[in-house]
Image (cartoon, rainbow, N blue to C red; front, top):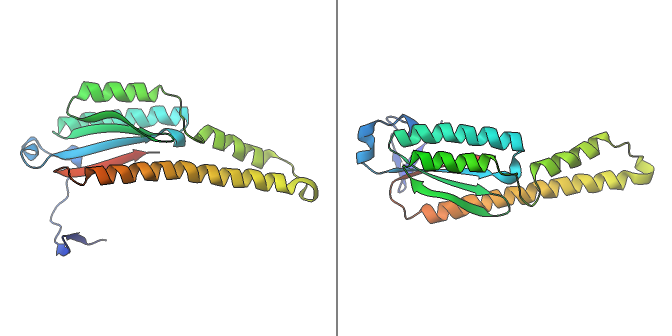
Length: 175
């Protein structure tokens, strides 16, 4: 379904091993750096807890396989929760604390949901207040764009900063 190029040359793909399925002998070669990024502005509290639980299970498997994990989160900006480590207990502790945070951001998922509920439940008379419904729709579109921009800027910052790190890099976004 795709072609893989390295330095402009087409490469033959002979196998693929997900980071958490690597064997112990694998970490003698280049290290696998895995960053877990959680979008606080894009998740409801229940979704944040589920995402952090899933991230914790993933981190345990990945670290057991010899990989290093970093944990970051995004609200209106990017926050470093844990630099790259193989310390499973520290990673799990950070994810547990993150799961208890209140989702924040310029426009949280809860705020955007409330606006959508207002739009859906309102009985607007187009002749009198159709502009009000349009205003709420515009606000919702703008709010979604601002949170998406925060996430994209954070991912771009990670990509730029990881360019010089040796080894394979993987970023997993929970949003």
